Image (cartoon, rainbow over all chains, first blue to last red; front, side, top):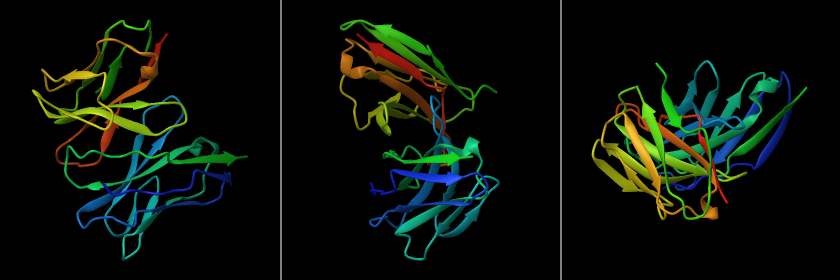
Length: 111
Length: 113
């Protein structure tokens, strides 16, 4: 399983754009990159997934460079409700895959 | 459509007692997972199942057993609870056609005294 490294914590202010970068140097050819969000006392929630270049949905954007050794989750104009832990996961794109949740990045959005 | 539900939400056990946690999903997902999350930590996979009647060990399987007799249910058992099993337990399910996209339940907070 590819190992991921991401910052332990980040602070931001309401209305700002937040970029969280994840490093996954030993990503394999078949691996996809998936990001989850977890609020206190809740289970993680899928945010976005990508393989290469850029993916955008109603919640976030995911930027993946050509070498795929890193990825950046971009949250536009964050609000207080975006305060959560964000996990970057890399796994073989097969169902039944054992995803490894590391410590994640604890994002604190301040007023 | 309730998604993934877990029973119970909270439980306190004494060391040596046994219990079963129930996970149910109504999305007809093929794959189901049990994780534990200790305070301030990420999730660790205990056991998982890729289909009815099949189970497999995850990262931290010791002290736990699982069963998947029906596609919609995944049971996690603790035969002899230990204080080290105090944690929050999350169940998740995943569709075959959407790999790595897991849907999580609300969690069960277990305390072993």
